[in-house]
Image 1 (cartoon, rainbow, N blue to C red):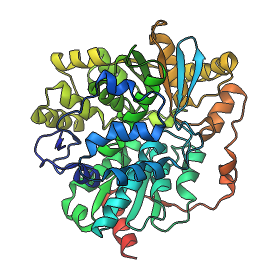
Image 2 (image 1 turned 180 degrees about the horizontal axis):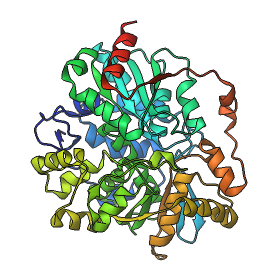
Image 3 (image 1 turned 120 degrees about the vertical axis):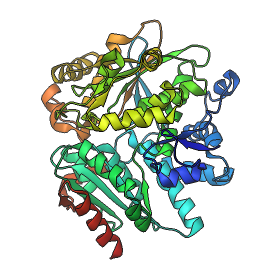
Length: 462
């Protein structure tokens, strides 16, 4: 299995190389050269299996010879051992043929744990085997950072620096990043928004002298291994509702397009999907693009669903690569235009996007109303991001086709917004009950590449 860059100018890599590299040296994102296929019999055989066994079968073809079967099974077992639900990703029925896929039973109460716990274990095995150490740098709008710090804290072969927008994440999200005491993980509060943080990370990867000197690696959703881990729960949930013998639909609240892209890959592998619905909040650049209005950046407006407050959706580049016939030069041109504010999508590419995805948006008031209405109708308390998904799913779903809406975070991660909408304060699970009392450790830093690089260099030297 080889991996190629979406911009066509970087060398092909193995899975292990792509995992440890993150962003390609031409600025692109790695994708598989070919997508492994699963037959209807292969998919049907997943019925009733533990989540870990499903994960092994789905991901094994992508991994190649990076890990032996025994190593990979052990990695998966360790990754999900601390999840708070034996099913790992249980389904809960909201309404007739509408189901909520609960992805918040991991250590940091968000869907990012599915990928980050796995990638942390893969990094550790790979680096320990080679006797190497890397510096991981990531940007977060809230959940990726805490999931990365939780997954990598205390590991011997990595230093981790997470950039988050100062004042633009929830208190729970911030404290999950700033309260770990392990010295190899550090949280940096950047004076800017998420897009600024993400741009700093990309600039560090494109500063090849710095990148090589500190052995930079990335675990944002730019890392293919992150996307791969998320493909699994599309299969596990769909099979629970009758796949491959009937189609299912998915609605995904998304800002950076990684989670919905994982669903796209599941479909490419052979999972029968009726609809893939992109759900956005008021920062609706993805919705506008799929509706044919081009991909043009505007101001990022803070919302009660902050993990979706994004204008530059990194993983959208991956689907554009397919939409433009895997023409790396065309994608590179689009990304150059994006730096100037945005781009229009060609007719052929737009047709592919509209054949593959449906989209919708939820305003702040609609998100709050959905939290209230869902609690009243089903007793289910939603986080604001999950509420965006439920609102859009209710508009788009065909009552005859099972709809699975991804519940991406526990409501306790956003207690103020949830309480304001519902009148119910969502408590943290018992294992995190003392989070508000733990001491915080963070560094506030300017939105400046030189300052960030200097800080990282100083810290890893100590």
